[in-house]
Every structure is written in C-alpha cells, then in structure tokens.
Image 1 (tube, each protein chain N blue to C red):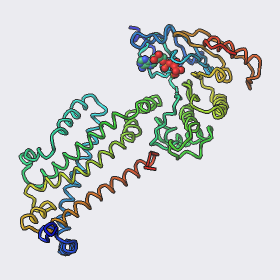
Image 2: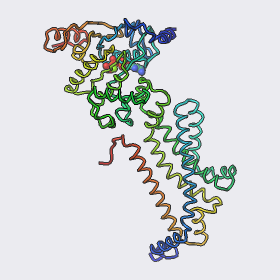
Image 3: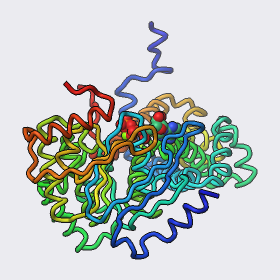
Image 4: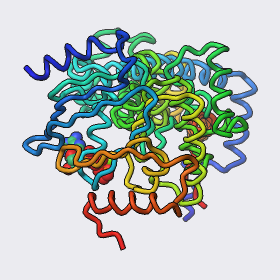
Length: 230
Length: 251
Ligand SMILES: Nc1ncnc2c1ncn2[C@@H]1O[C@H](COP(=O)(O)OP(=O)(O)OP(=O)(O)O)[C@@H](O)[C@H]1O
Ligand SMILES: [Mg+2]
C-alpha cells in the first residue's frame, strides 16, 4: 500500500494540479498542445477529404472500387504504425511524416465506414430517385451522401480516436514540439507529475473529440428518429 | 434481338403521336431465369384512361408496372410510354433526410416557381403545413399523400400506382380514394392502378383488368355512374364476376 502511493511514482492530486498550473502559467503546455493540435487537425482535414472523395469514387464506379477499395483493405489489414519507417523514408523527419501517419489512420477509418455506408444506401430510394428524373449530381448530393452520413459519422468517431493514437506514435519521431515531446522529456527527467498532467490532457482531448462527434451527429442527423435509450 | 427492338422503340417514345394512346404495350414478355412472369401481355390505354390491374399475389402486376415505368427495360415485345411518367410505390420511398417539400420537388430544378408549384401540390393533398417537416414525423397516410404529391407535381401523362394504399387502414383508404379521384379529375393523367382490392378497382377505374398466368384474362369496362356506390346491385355483380375470375369464391 505504502509502495503503491509512493509519491515518487504516484504524485498526489495537488502536486499534479500545481504542476499543471505552473506549465500553463509559463505557456509551455499551450505551446506544445497547439503544435500537436495542428498536426491532428491537418491530418484530419486531409484524411477526411481523401476518405470521403475516395469512398465516393469507390462507391459509385467499378474502376474506383478496384483501384481504391482493394488497396484500402490492404492498408486496413496492416497496423498503421508499421508504416512509420516507410513514411520517414519518404517524407524525412519533419512535420510531414507525422501528419502523414495521422492522415493515413483517419483516411482508413473514414473510407471503410463511408464506403460501406454508400453501398448500403437503400436501393429502393435510389430507384425512386431515378424514376423522378434525378441526375447524377443530385443523386450524389440529395440521396447518396445524406444516406451515407450516419455511416460517415461512425467513421469520424473512430477517426478522431485513431488520430490521437497516431499522434502519440508520430511524435516519437524527432519532435521538437508537441505533447509527445513533453512526454518523452518528462520520462527522461523522471517527472512523473508532468506525465500525469499529460495523461489528463490526452483524456480531455479524447472527451472533447467525442463531444464534437456527438454534436455533429445530433445536428446532422436531426431527420433521424432513432432509439435513444428510452 | 427482341431486346434491341424494344430499345429502338423506346428511342421513339415521346415524339408526339400518343394522342390516341397514352400507352401501347404489345406482346410484352418477361421471364426471371426460366420463370415466365409475363407472356404476350398486351395493353393499350387512351389518354386520361383510368385502368385498374387486378391479379393474385405473384401474378406479375408489379413486374408489368415496372415495365411501363421504364424501371425494367430488359423485356421482349413492343412498349410505348409517354415521356412524362410518375410512380407511386406501395411504400412511400421518401428520402428521410430531405424535408417534405424537397422530396416533392426531387429531380426538378430548384427554382422559385418549382417550389411554389410544389407547395401548391402539397396543398392539394392537404399537407401544406408539413412542407418543412421530416418525412419520419409523418403518419403512413400522410407519407403516401406526399408520395402522391411528388408524382402529381410533374403533371404526368401516365401515373403508375403500385398498391399505393395497401398499407393503410380502411378509413384512411377511403379518404385516399376521394383524394385520388379529385386529383385525377383535375389533372386527367392516364392511370394504371395495381391493386389487390376489387372494390377499390370498381370504385375508381374506367376499366378493370385481371392478370392471370402472364396474360390479361379479363378486361371489363365499368360503366357505373359516379359517385359509385357499393350498395348498387351492378357493383355487387361486377364484384362477384371479378372475384370469380381471381379464383375466389364470393359468398
Ligand atoms: N427481380 C426478380 N428476380 C426474380 N424473380 C422476380 C423478380 N421480380 C419478380 N419476380 C418474380 O416474378 C413474379 C411476379 O412478381 P410481381 O412482383 O410482379 O408480383 P405481383 O403481382 O406484383 O404480386 P403482389 O401482389 O404480391 O405484389 C413472382 O413470382 C416473383 O417471384
Ligand atoms: Mg406487387
């Protein structure tokens, strides 16, 4: 018991709070947080765009299915982080491989879910739309994309989780800034209190991501009257 | 070869010349695998003619309706249909993510005139107050009225109805019959109504067909004056006649 609560391995809550306040006061935490957040936001922006466009092409055209979906299946089968050495070889050790790893994780999560959602759009609705003269463009914007939206949002939830996980791996590459940098510094100098502060930050970021996903769901899916847990 | 011919005939569709006929279908054949559903099915409909198609479950009524709606183009025979067609299916098939009015104007250019026309058509089916509602908040009868508005807003020359009231309760169905009659009186499209309900067919149609084994086995004009009444002895006689043709022993 005493060992479990050894302040050298488990700092008390007040210590952690004081460390957090010091880190915030010096602006150190915000600076690193902002660096990490930028990587995640860039990876999300690129990954979501690629995922949606790719899923649409794969969902609507046979050649797209052969070209994109088959490859995404393979990428999905390999743990993303195994690609890190390849990404470093391609992009060097700057920002690019970090953003690329996050992009890849996001892309895969978005693609898998959006593609299967597109393929599962109710065929009788598509048929009805066609009989009412709906052209290709309207079919995509008024039928297929909104029909695939619930699946896309499931993908987005997973993508947000995947993005933060990928960030941790990405920042093990020579990162001059970012939460990962703070984490490895803290490990080196055995600042267990700083590590606990960072764990708290990761938790908050994860919760904030889920809140964003939930907000998007309730906003974009207001047409859906579904079981809400009664 | 037969398929090529049909394709060719379809290319000629809508080039005028359907003043005397809204629909010409000659020797239409359709088989799924080896199971022939329609054989030598022929039907001609005059403009503004209201035809009801009866038949047992699985007799091929929906298959034929899909041919007339150009949903199924891989058929044998000769088919000529007008360019402006609209279908109401048994289920409303509204896009749940589009508000009611946007469902009605689906496939049309989204101009102010079209929206106003859509609103006016919603008013005709008594749903102008639901223009901005989500389809899932509507009752079954309301949703089917929206489907009817979505079809009517296109001013079709041919209106295809595949058991549109099959899922509705008896009271709602009576209201829907009145509504359909009213819309028909105003817009005068040719109508093909597929139904299970013999009474519905006699109440609404100018002509009732019975589909048996891929062909029309009975075609009868309904000459009863409007408003038609189930207690009319001629109504009962027609009803008995049609039920017998459908293989049901009327009591
Ligand atoms: N896509 C299809 N593939 C194979 N068989 C089909 C297909 N569509 C219809 N059939 C068959 O064709 C026959 C006629 O079907 P259809 O849907 O036209 O019947 P129906 O007269 O509309 O029946 P109901 O009154 O029950 O709606 C049925 O035996 C059905 O199994
Ligand atoms: Mg049917």
